[in-house]
Length: 135
Image (cartoon, rainbow, N blue to C red; front, side, top):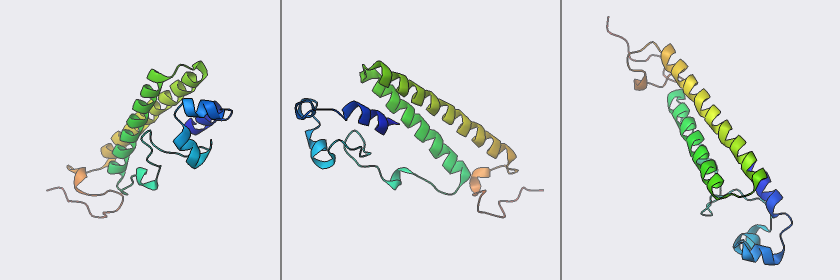
């Protein structure tokens, strides 16, 4: 979504506008194509997709990612003055909040269903014989 917004805002820029906006370094490498990267220029990589294979760990990671995205959208809204862009960003921000809530609900459901005093002592998706409860 963000890539589509950036494309729509930059597709008709002139050379002069590219230079005035400080996009010339980006333009040299990517013209006006969308190349996913952080604001500091670090390209997107699969390393951003942190998966451990433990549902408790992964749900916490997902919740953190949703909050990071929400914060990024908050920051975009602070600097943006285009109504149409702000409207789309507000929608994306609301979506991150809902995702965070759903991941939190799933975390609660998962931990409620684990029949162990210390469910953090094992990986419920892999360990077949978690720590036994004392009788």
